[in-house]
Image (cartoon, rainbow, N blue to C red; front, side, top):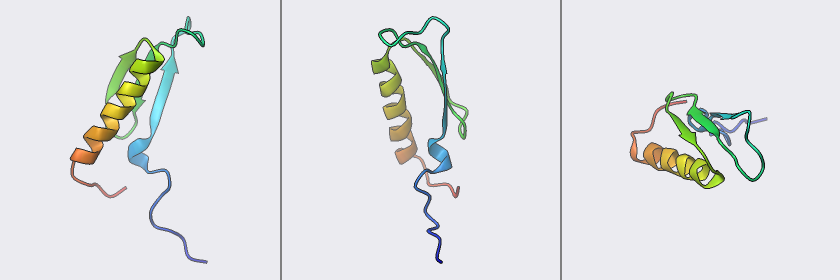
Length: 68
C-alpha cells in the first residue's frame, strides 16, 4: 500500500470557527481563526465569513510554500 504524501486536507487550511451565542441561521456572526498562522478575523454575516476564507486562501497562495 502506497500512501499519498499530499494531504487532501493540508494543515495550512485548518480553521476554528467560533459562532457568537446570539448567532442564528439568518444572522451568522463570530470569529474565524487559522490554526497554523494564528490569523483571526471577526465576521457579522455569512458573506463576511466566506470573504475572510477567500482572503486567507489567496494570501496563502501568494506566500512561499511551507512543508506541512
